[in-house]
Amino acid sequence: MEVMHSGFAFLTAMLVCLGAVPLIIRFAVAQGLYDLPDVLSFLSTPKANTISRRIHNAPVPLLGGIAIFLSFLATYLVWSLNSRLGAIVGSSVLIFMVGLIDDIRTLPARFRLLSQTACTKGVALQFKDLLMRLLDILCQP
Image (cartoon, rainbow, N blue to C red; front, side, top):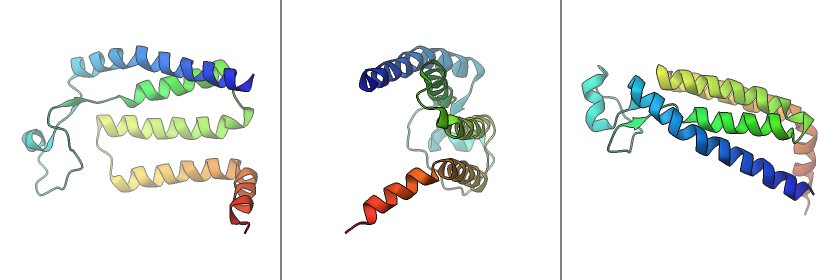
């Protein structure tokens, strides 16, 4: 029964994401929210001598994380797979907000890393008993 429950949860996430992606792409295009490749980014940003992580050749619409987050949140709200997932949902909201702000206004990498590390620590503390059992199993000869 649990496998079927997980299958329905997966279908929920997939359908929400498939429905949300085209809408979010249209919105990002209408608002002019693009990530520009290195070839074009020097035209729109005054930063000189910066090393970029961009590997795409054409402008890519931003805000794709909204679809991922909506599918995760809808699945959690519909199926409530585990009551202990509150820490994961709270951390996901914070990581989503940081990513959204970073899409609209570039945030420093150090801030993004620190916020993601704090969220991960919060989840690890919530599930520390499970992590300790897993470490015991993995460390046995």
